[in-house]
Image (cartoon, rainbow, N blue to C red; front, side, top):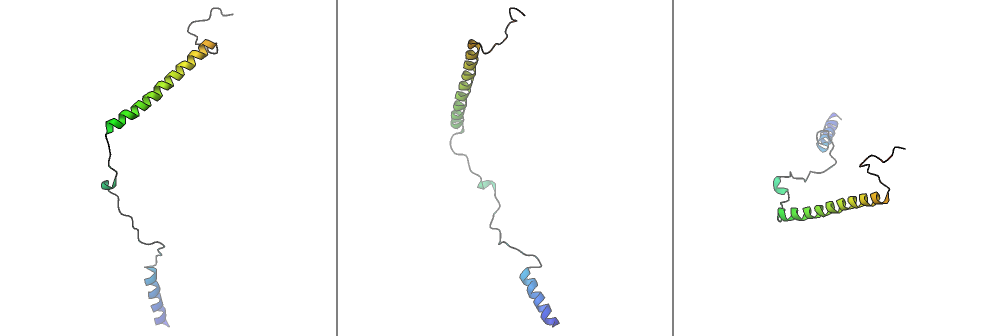
Length: 90
């Protein structure tokens, strides 16, 4: 009886792998290196100039909209910028 128990415990230990369970297979992942990174393509300065042109257009449109809004609200009387003191304090 003792021999059977020790044989079963050895078999169970071999199947269990030193008492730890493993619910997943081997990890197929390999370490990433600098060689795996993408390399730049095309001319940097050409792309930079195109992006800056787009950003400059957006800036000019924004400034023009702001100035236009200020002019319209000032001329319509909705906005008083208080450049000088009022004529009377009454």
